[in-house]
Amino acid sequence: MRLTAAQALVAWLVAQRSETLDGYEVPLFPAVFAIFGHGNVLGLGTALYERRTELPVWRGHTEQGMALAAVGYAKATNRRQVGVVTSSIGPGALNMVTAAGVAHANRLPLLLLPGDTFTGRAPDPVLQQVEHFGDATVTVNDAFGAVSRYFDRITRPEQLISSLPQVIRVLTDPADSGPAVLALPQDVQAESYDFPEALFAPVVHRLIRPRPDQRALAAAVTQLRAAHRPLMILGGGVRYSGAGGTVMEFAEHHGVPLVETTAGRTLVPHRHPLYAGPLGITGSASANAMAAEADLVLAIGTRLQDFTTASWTVFAPDVRLVMINAARFDAVKHGALEVVGDADATVRELDGQLGQWCVDSEWSARAAALRTAWDTYIDARRAPTPGLPSYAQIVGVVNESSGPGDYVMTASGGLPGELVGGWRAVGGVPTMDVEYGFSCMGYELTGAWGAAMAHSAGVVTTLLGDGSYLMLNSELFSAAFAGHPFVAVVCDNDGYAVIARLQEGQGGAPFNNFYAQCRTTRADPPRVDFAAHAAALGCAVFTASDLDEFRAAYGLARSAARAGSGPVVLVVRTRSSVWTEAGAWWEVGVPEQLSGRAGYMEAKSRQVRFLRP
Image: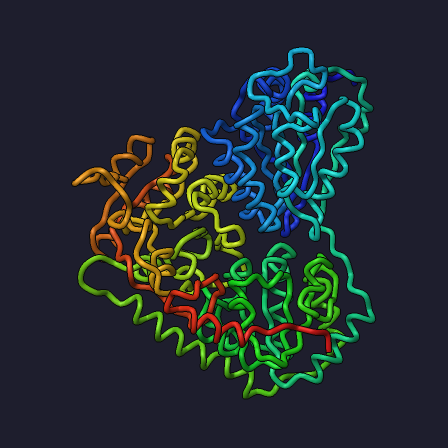
């Protein structure tokens, strides 16, 4: 088939199919997000126009925002579908680097197609080209090297034949999942080649389930049988494997208590008797107490990030660690006994080999007892109080109003601690996306746009602070224009409250976080009217000034979102100094002159350095 390189790429995208976790066949690439410029408008833009009925194209307003929306789409579909994003060369391409970092850190598939400079070099230097004096092959797209799982620059059309299988490997492999970047010089996009028809044959990509090495599995069985107080940690890998039900059956069969990471949140029903809560800094005191007492940790599908492990102070010094992970890179960390394999397949085999082994009932019962105490604490945080509502109270209203088909999101700042630590899930189906792998401000609105595309039933609600709103709000208009509904709860507390908490809590002077602490030449500096701004972007808008007003307004916002007309923004003023505390430590560098240095040094002495037993 004689096609341009751009036509061949688009035809290949259309031919790729995916099987969801519940067995349905869907497009692997359901949509393309695009901002056109001189680096992609004629080559890739023309090819996308020709196939527009088969591959929808959505217009965004920042390249970063579009790419973050694609990340949100991938998360909402449990990595079974992948968003595609194309940009022009230069600043358009570089704007996507941050989103690539989000996808890379969170192990989420993303396909980026930035334009690139001419391979023929006749018009050099072209508009938006950055010239490197010592290396003529370098372009701005080389910046993707640190944040891509696979990178290629297509300098000849026929290179697609060998490059596209590597792209699909990265996007569909549970161990390597992450961003793939194909840099597309604009002259090559328009160049024709006789491509083999087989390249465009429909292919259905199904979840790969690698089986564990039997020797490693036997070693894990031995360690579990020797344990008196084992604890299971469920991470995002459990979600993407669709292993939630299998893991619950394993826990119930053997009486092993369960905790969740941020990425694994909402896999377990909150009231389950073996559930101790979420683990770590943004988790719960109940899960952290269980971790401190456990003599063996069975970590499934998690890389055990510092927020999960309280910078490696949450575990007992002599704890043994068994890691089940599809990626050996993660499984070997921290001196763990590595068991490399798919979460669902591996847990099933582990269950069979353990037979009737069961944990002491007193240890099993401890999970529910500790979680009940944590629930009492959260109830107190959610209880109505006079004046402005707290983040915990806002989360409580959203939680109580949400049903099994709804989806809740947040990213940076103080809301992850309130949402991860306080949310009470029905379990079974993942219903939460907290982007705390890269902690990217602005993901809250852009990721919600992608999640809203993926969710045809239920209400998507995203919670964010005023700082995140101001950082990246342009895709509210993109979602409004496209007609994708979600609810955005904007909590206005006059600045970067959670960083101010960190700053002042360690003895730092209040500086440059709340607006009252920021430099200005004005005696009466302006405030943002978030409601008016969101309305100007085409959103339905509600406001609230206390908890009762918020409860009523959130009900109206949900109804408006169900009507499907576009984003609904609910603006509420919130307190800036009331937080949920899980009783865990997080390592940040504390200078000697600050009062927090003594506590920092004490906590450093409790950090666990794992070595294989």
